[in-house]
Amino acid sequence: MTGSNIENDLRVGYTFDDVLLIPQRSTISSRKDTNLQSNLSKNIRLNIPIISANMDTVTESNMAIKIASLGGIGIIHRFMTIEEQINEVLSVKRSEGIMIDQPVTIGQDGNVGQVKELMSLHKIGGILVKDDLNKLLGIITKRDLFFEYDDKKSVKEVMTKDLITAPEGTSLDDAKTIFINNKIEKLPIVDSSDELVGLITSKDIYKRDKFPISSKDGKGRLRVGAAIGVREEDVDRAIKLTEAGADTIVIDIAHGHSNHTINMISKIKDKIGKADIIVGNVATAEGTKDLIESGADAVKVGVGSGSICITRIVTGAGVPQLTAISDCVSVAKEHNIPIIADGGIRTSGDITKALAAGASTVMIGSMLAGTDESPGVIVSRPNGRYKMTRGMASLGAAVDRRIKETNSIDEQEMLEYVPEGVEALVQYRGQASEVIGKLVGGLRSGLSYCNAKDIIELQNNSKFIRITGAGKAESGAHDVHIVE
Ligand code: XMP
Image (cartoon, rainbow, N blue to C red; front, side, top):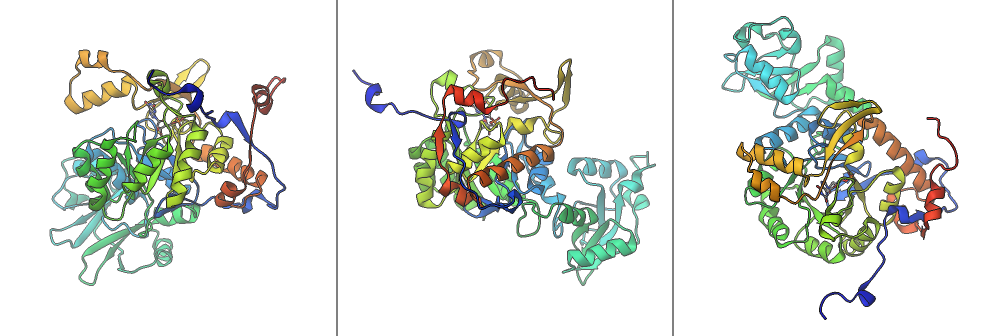
């Protein structure tokens, strides 16, 4: 008889609900004293260990901006054209910075209609006007367009010409003084020959003051990642995304422990500048080892763990998530490479357990899919408000992808498609900051229960206990009628 020997090979795989963390005598006086910084990848450190998932119902620029403002990072999904994905990355990069070094501009012969299009495409409220020699001529803001109904009117007629500018090297604090004294919102930066070199906005300074722990790159811009697949055209996608400023490229396929993935790492490694490569998904020590030895700067772990995944049902393959994390960490820590726990996070307690098992960060999908910042609209039902989410391997996602790529649909191909994900409604949860705030608060308390002032101490000190079904039932509210 061939095949795996069940008697000898069988191990028990655990997931979050199978265990609890044993409380320990705590020296932490306030949970506010805990430090949640953690490594996303070899060269990127985050202020909170939370990543929004590269799913088309979770992360486009709105979500990425919010998560990075709160100290984590968002990964822009890949189910759009290269140009669209680049624009999403640019929207994040332009949303905030010490100075926006490639502000959106238009020539004075452009018209109002084009300005409106640029404003809506880049989600910005002002466009600088310059000539062919890069000399600054003026600015058009939303206020200039308020009563401007004639889209054919030229930029020259509408723009504001008398501009207050500042020289290269102006600090944010100096810019803040200029904004306050002159009651303006945008400050173009020019060099000694009056050529445009950048733009500082009052919004950037407001955000710097409001979100002091946001994740930023060396230029003070919010960090963002972008996902790619393993097709030949994804090499070009990766190059263009990093040129647009993506801090990390996430090679993301369902079964990441594959030759395709490993080849892709070597194809892009030397072509994407300083961006880190995150690779996944795997669920084993062997998979982690192969990806790290091929050049991965972080490994994403989770096969079938996600809320909308049915991979384990359809294929029979997968590893319960806590065991998968622990197995992958056992190899990754020898190489000093962080592990991302991807999928299955439903509570702050799950995050504490994932990190205690050795993950450095967690990736979250459906918990964020129900927020204002995710793509899609709110759906009202008699029993509440919801948003749509779906597995990236669901039938709906596959159909939409095919229509987008080919403008048509091959019914036979879709009938033969075997989905490994589902489409679902998730409860509407308000702003992402509310969800993240609750998760972060719970995680800080979790650290305090484990006598850990930071995530490294949590990983070193934690002790798990396995629980039974009765223990699990006891863990939630029980034997009461919940009123809220
Ligand atoms: P949560 O539980 O946070 O999980 O919603 C998000 C993660 O689920 C993965 N994902 C899928 N897995 N089939 C799968 O088996 C799918 O169609 C699918 N879509 C997303 C992905 O890793 C994501 O981050």
